[in-house]
Amino acid sequence: MRALVIAPQPFFTPRGTPFSVYYRTMVMAEQGVDIDLLTYGQGADVELPNTRIIRIPSFGFLGSVKTGPSVLKLFLDIFMVIWTVALLVRHRYDVVHAHEEAVFFCRFLKPLFRFKLVYDMHSSLPQQLENFQFTESKLIKKIFTWLEDGSIEAADAIITICPDLSDYVRSRIGDDPRHLLIENSIFDPVRLAKRKGESVVSDAIPEVPEGHPIVIYAGTFETYQGLDLLLSGFKRVISEQPEARLLMVGGAPEQVENYTAMARELGLGNAVIFTGRVPPDVARALNRRADVLTSPRSAGTNTPLKIYEQLASGKPLVATRIHSHTQVLDDRVAFLVEPTADGLSEGILQALSHPRDAQERASAAKVLYETDYSRAAYTVKMSRLLELLA
Image 1 (spheres, rainbow, N blue to C red):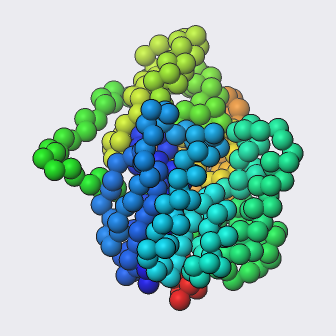
Image 2: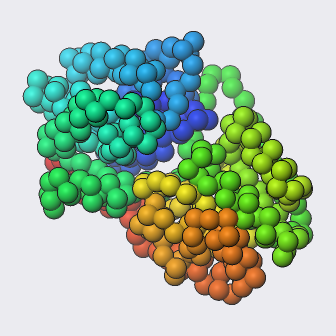
């Protein structure tokens, strides 16, 4: 089988690494699929078996591609269409695996080039227009809804990444066998392709205070992550456990500056340590030193990728009781709390003060991960996709 994977996003940049594209491609390639991967010009190449990475021009002078809908993405997608048509003319593909909005133009190319179409649905695009406040136009939202519904109907397979999206698709097509729920649940190390003459430099791991209970947040610093609630809640944590330290891993420089100022205003002093952005392997090394992991997200419906790593970590997890989390988590595997400062402080204190309970939940979380979300479980789900396409 030969496949064209189309990923309209910056492929492996510090801002918004598309792990779903990487792991989908890697597992398909391991199962014998020959793949051309078409993506934006920005980013670093990675080592993938049986895969050729093809990039449109980077247009770096226009700035970096941000998360969510943008005018820059619309501009770049024009070139994605041109490159896609050129590849389809030159090569015979059995399957086109379109991520996100790439499906909108691929569905119209499908009858011309007679390939099977996979719609890899990371989110509902009409919902994204609202969530990122991209436009108030009802007409544009209706157009995107029409494109999305038509793409679901036209696709030979639809992949959703979380139960919420799965329910969304089922509301449109029912229990259709074309629809598969395949969570972004694996996190094998990503190997960047070495450039000629490039030496390997190991990434330094930021220092973690010795002799202190360590609470860690690792992820993006967007407002929906609830970091203001986490910082406010941690003020109560250190009032009861002064030795506790909060390690905040991630964030662009301006975001780190804003939250550092917030921590200062709250009087947290040296109790909070900001590392800035670090590579994924460094973030994992830091998580291994944690006594408690946190996911304080205050909004959203898609399950965060980091939840699966946290389940597998063997560390106690404190997470907010919102739909984004409860699709995967329950009180058996995590300390679920209200999405408030008081809720988060109570959960962290409970996890730190009751180590036996904390370890029981962490152990149950690890079993859940191995059973439902591990590399082996993910490979089985991807095998079902390939069987459907065959």
